[in-house]
Length: 67
Image 1 (cartoon, rainbow, N blue to C red):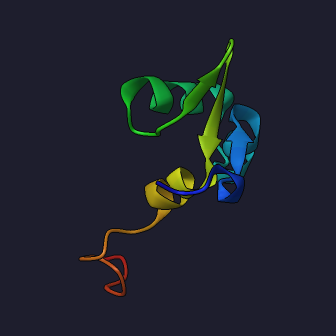
Image 2 (tube, rainbow, N blue to C red):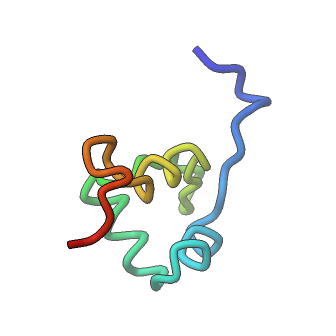
């Protein structure tokens, strides 16, 4: 298990800004399971590594460009 001191958590608003989507889109991604998150009280925190995994291109398509 990774040391939690090495994990950086982002708020929904920070993730939305990073991905250039609305807060509601981030909430929908969390609720659908597409974006893992940890719930703290009434708010969510998303590990930075989860965002990188969601926006990274699949290995099979990397370097192929857009057709």
